[in-house]
Length: 210
Image (cartoon, rainbow, N blue to C red):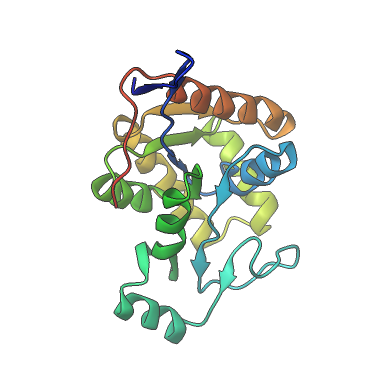
């Protein structure tokens, strides 16, 4: 653990900002978890993902996502403005690079919400990022959550379930796994907060370099 001692002989920890990546299969509750974390007032900077998918009725542009056209998204790609990006179920998702770098430079802990592919990309760019995998209690429960969202067992929903089963095989890439229960998101937030607290106490701190 890096430490400094002031003129009064008091030892203080030299704290480094963390890059926290929340991921998991579609329908596991990533958005709901982030919303609950915000409600609890945990001191993170929340990076808003850029996407080309259609905005849902309850979502707010600039809060839940930055909603853009595919033409606009391609300009972000061409300019190198994205830390990582991926095409998922026909839609593009990306993380704005400068926003992440700016807040880490300001010593703010940064939290990202990405899919499994995005988590893999960030792990390559920033090996010291903390990857947290949100896991459903069961595939049946995940199916029920997706049915509530999409309303019917469509071809897209079936594809999401197949992908979710494949994504469960990616656990070894992650640092932590949390089982989510929609009726008890407070527990999910407590576990994430506990992970961050433990990481802040590491003898060898994580140093994020982008």
